[in-house]
Length: 325
Image (cartoon, rainbow, N blue to C red; front, side, top):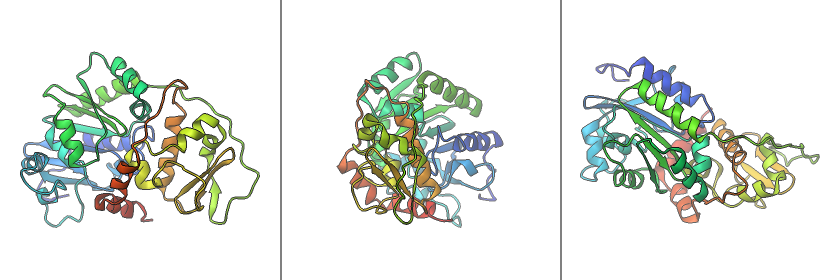
């Protein structure tokens, strides 16, 4: 961190770490948090993990006014690298820095909450979320590519009073004036959106997996017909594409071409050298589909949106950081 700036308050670091260590809130390097102090905004670095917030320097100080100008498209390229206050840091601001800057709230938290995702990937789920979050200062934002497109979509829908945002096919944003306020709001949203997890039996495949592969414990998804169909139908949120590849767990392709390969009715083969981030994303899909109601339909982000993520330098950077030992 910049030695000339006071570090983020311990309570903010503790909240960030708590969320990062909870796989039902954040998976691997996903999610981000920010704290504003005057015109200084601390934002999680791209590719860093919130779980390390209380142990490592994972936050970047940016000029909030400069980041806000990038959010409005009047300066910069949307990466907010020009807004970084410490010229010597090797850290890059999160690709979602612009929407953090756009909120007036002192504390902004963005998670990939499993409870939220379960609702946000489904038309019926979105309708249920609107009902469950009634009475809260809440808006829902359609899917948009992370970065400036998402920021602009958020800015066109929120008001000064908005404190809860459901991002369709993406996640949750909660905002407030203090760490305790946001922590309490997060807990309330999670409680309202909580979904029961269906225990599904899993029989370890008898066949030996291909060399370099192992059977994943999330293989129950391949053995439940409806869940298997959902898992193969496409990617439902950005980080699935970034860390597990496009098309959901499409199966039938070359084993090992992507980290996980689904074999319908049998199991899911996972590369033995899969990174922690890839393993976390496979668990995330299992956690989401394990809560997905039988009478809801699911809406993947689609091939065009997947291609935008695969060919994006910002996500290639996160992939590279996540592959480090």
